[in-house]
Amino acid sequence: MTDDSDIIAAARAAMARAYAPYSRFKVGAAVRGASGRLYAGCNVENAAYPQGWCAEASAIAAMVMAGETRIVEAAVMGGGDALCTPCGGCRQKLYEFAGDELPIHVCGPQGLRRTVTLGELLPLAFGPENLT
Ligand code: THU
Image 1 (cartoon, protein in one colour):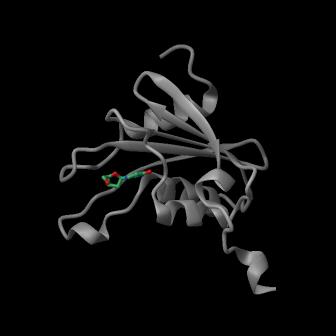
Image 2 (cartoon, rainbow, N blue to C red):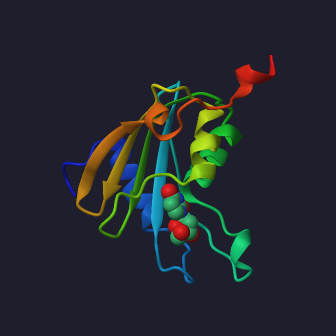
């Protein structure tokens, strides 16, 4: 798609790298750090099924490895008819590095389907501030 924004293009490119031989459900994700840099990741499944992990987790790991700890924008792209929103665990993983206002672009292969906030997906979240 030529009209993808940069973050959606990154999620799309990551989706193409997905390792999903078991579910056949490929997902790509991208997060923008406070620096403006984008970090992308895909889901990585495993023959021992519970050991697989989500695209969002891969993208967050890439961001942390680059030295960033603040997410200002996120995008997820998956197939299927339903919205590919981040799973419960990934909502919590995102919240570690962002707040309620984080925009998450939920995309399908045709592009953006809907933009939601992390606060909509994970209301009354428990985060680092709860430990202070
Ligand atoms: N998956 C993700 O990578 N991110 C999501 O937001 C939803 C689900 C992956 C996990 C698994 O590899 C496959 O999609 C099917 O659940």
